[in-house]
Amino acid sequence: MPHLTFAVLGSLQLLAGVSAQTWCNKHYMASQPVVPPGGNFPVAAASKDPLLAFRCAAAMKPYLAEDIGTPAGVLIDSPVVYSEISGAQPIDLLSGPLSSAGELDVTVSLNGKTLVNALVPLNASAYELSFSLDGITPQMTPYNLSCEATYAASSSSPQTYSASAALSVLPNPTNSSVTKMDLRTGALLAKPATGLGGEYEPIFPIGFYTTFDGYLSTNLSAVDTLKEQGFTIIHIVPTFDNMTAFEMVLDRMQEVGLYLMYDMRFTYMNNTSVMEQVNSIKYRPNLLLWYTGDEPDGTSDPLNATSIAYDLIYSLDGYHPVSLVLNCQDYEWASYTAGTDIVMQDVYMIGNNVTWSNEWNTTCTPDYGDCGCDNCFSIAAGDSAAVPPNSTYYGSTVPANSGVGSYFDISDRVASFKNRLEVMGWERTKAVWTVPQAFGSAESVVLVTFLYLLLLTSFVRYWMRTPTGEEWVVQSIMGINHGALGVVPWVDPNPDYIKMAASGFALSLPKLTPFFFNAASVRSNYLVGGVDIATWAADTETLVLATNTDYVTSKVTWKDIGLHGGGVEAVYTSGSVENTGSSFTLGSVASAAFVVRS
Image 1 (cartoon, rainbow, N blue to C red):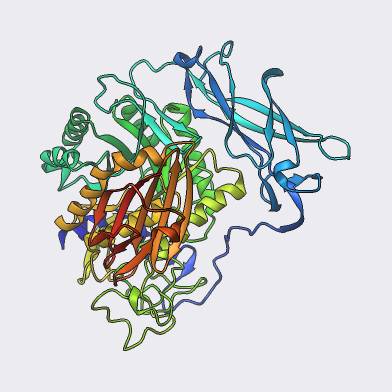
Image 2: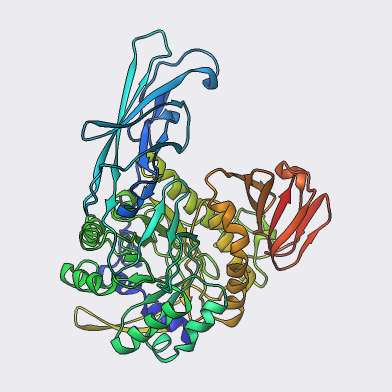
């Protein structure tokens, strides 16, 4: 199948595996011993006494010279926790409920000058304090904000806490675009990709990793089609052998208003190449963000490689965020994530055996093996409703460790990434995106490419089938429901039914993103049987985004998710969906979005 050939050509996973004979630092060949990979994210120690994890962050990254004269903001987080996460310090609280335990007296200063002083509640999240940028000279290097908090409500002497934050105030760009990160929501803000002017608007990035050579390079009309289908970005996969065609594609993307996610996967550890590429591309009006490491944890790239690239890119540009994707469930996550603004996950669990490697004929465990879905779990024993039709991995009943992949591996991966950001103190400054699977094959695919001047050939037999359109939607919603703020599927070209399903979802997003990117909205999560649900409540409206992970019809009552169901509008459906007034019903792997008005 040609689309999977493109997918493999765009990935370093197999090449690195053939060369290093490890993936996620785990041996996977039958001839190799079991050696624990190490690199696990440390579990924060529990505390029997309360701790205050006082944190601050600029509300926007970057501010520009043109923003001077309008209010800026700093976000204060003051969670009271019982685990030793980054920066958490003991706090002697007043007895009684936390809501009546007093406030923090917070002062934010720059170079000894107070910018703002205010009282902030305990357990606040993204509590915004306004200040003026007047007198702050724009420069390419960030300033360092000092945030100090005093808690004096208890009978003991005042307790003090400190944190710091980067404040980026850049000169106005003369001939390039700017992508801002709204740290209140994690949204990217950009002016229209056409470069013809306009206001900054939140962008929900949705668009495929897209093959250049042999696809976009010879099919310029594909750009127009992707725009018509509702996608907002194109992530062009290198290599770019025909630079004339490449420039034509970028020009056409700008003309139709599509943003560029620029990929340096093969060269991000080559400083000279990174400098050349950044200096060539950074002036593009439709550049949204950079992309460096493609599964660097899988290939065990040097632990500081992503940070070196990140610092270099910011020294050359500074106006666009940096992204990467991690494939491993838990291998040196903090080291690789340190070098990015946006960390993506790519759990591929459809059509492969997640506990026994079709490729290497070995088992897969936390210490050994490569099943194409690192440390993924099978569906629960006996859960026949979660088994795709025509699955061959089980008999009359579903055993434990059946190998049938679970959609909850996607939500668990996104949620674990979000949790780790909180543990590290990065929850404001970094965002999580998701990479749904849009490929698969019942046939082996030959990969032929050069690595270290050697011709290597490998055969891929991980994924035995391609997801259906409805399954593609389930993957995407499982990521979004648990905090992903972008959807970048691997890979295009892909079957028409996947593209149609993805287009339908993309075209519905303008009705959904006002809830995702509303700093005042509150997200809540529910699981009703096999239906994963998230709600975003804002003022008198609540967005309900639901997806059925089962292959049988499932029913959810509005009462199950704390709503009465009155004034319901279906703003998106995938598969068989019915709203009966007191409940809604989702057919096999069906999905829906409703706006419920109170």
